[in-house]
Image 1 (cartoon, rainbow over the protein chains, first blue to last red):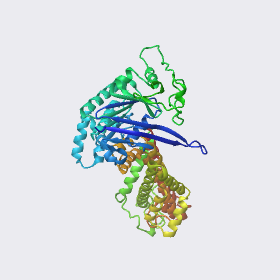
Image 2: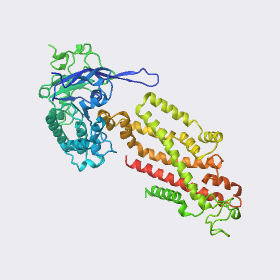
Image 3: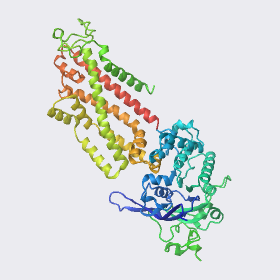
Image 4: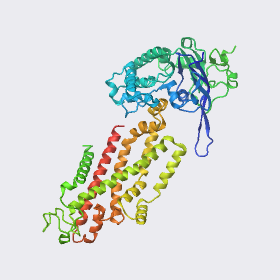
Length: 313
Length: 272
């Protein structure tokens, strides 16, 4: 069976100029990502800020052209498709519902936009389909005539979800869809997404830095570090028994509600990862608490979904 | 009280516009009808005024109030048309440069810089002097010269809007680039462009008056405030009002437009 979405060796390098005479530096934002996801599955992608999550999202959507590799949805290469065909296969939900809705358009027009862009439907049909999708996400017909500024953050995100689903895409790419919302609203939006996924059978990529959210929504989790997946495993397995040292550090860094404990020390040191200067060997070795000499010279082997020397037999 | 300037500007501009539109109802005099018997008759508040001519008459005996009212039409029409011509040119260039960046933006920036290096009044004088004066030519020359501010503002605001998620969402939703430019970008930079439009309109009206004063704007006998000042120049020592009545009209109109522009700018700033 062809996977719903397949990513092969996807890479993106940026060239950043340094001053007037400086040599341009190469930033490896996304560095050789492979991925295959079956129909209806949900993959959570986690990682710290600056690890390339958002660049990966833009690459998958086709907003950025990859330096290498390709994205295939239902067996078709997204790069080869026109904008309208691509829109029917994959749709995004962005992080900030305050900047993802055009402030000059009414809610109904925002949701109708993908249908209008596709063409071929009468305005009555477009209106009916848009209203149906809005109702499905919990936005009443009465609210459809309002402008985004008149809605709350949670309602705006519902509108953004309706816009993403109105074309019935195969893949839904959620880029931190709840991190701009209040905690009480986050749960509502997550439940709505889970319900729609189940009903419509949509394959979902869920990018987040919030581990609790990912644990809640994802079947499978990929941990990203410096532009690469360092570990991939089923969600239950990954949270119960993380294999890669970075995943362990990430799970250990979760703040507890217990007062007085302070910020946990995860033993990663103070150095920040720098995508313009990716370490040789294992990219995590300068921060790894259990690194051995081999880590700085050899690329790590892939063992049971994790790229780490220590896991090698 | 913050919006007092805005309301005052709208009120004055509205009054002048209404006066220009309904000029035939406000005065029974023909602005072109000469009557050499009553040349330079004084306005109503001076000794020996002709009760038939409220603001007196000019050196050819034409009713000054009628010429002032019909002259408002010339100023407003030239101002609005110039803004339309320059707005279309400048906004198109600015949006294209700001949205696409790269080479397109290099070309747009080069054109803006080139335009800024050209002295407007000098070129306008040269062109009108070469091709003869007409209202259409004044509009075209000013329109083709005054687009730079539109382009600069449209370009920078488009750059801000381009990176926002709703533009990415429109892209991902399959919208064509022209649709993104027209229905996603343009409506969101329009408020900034409205401010530029008022500034440019005031500038165009002043330039038209200046060109007319120099004899290179609209041709006589069309009533233009600039032309009225030019024609009254020879009589200003003994009949100063011939100059200062159209002068004040011009001042008030430009002031009103600028008040409106300042008010709009504050309003746009508030909504951010």
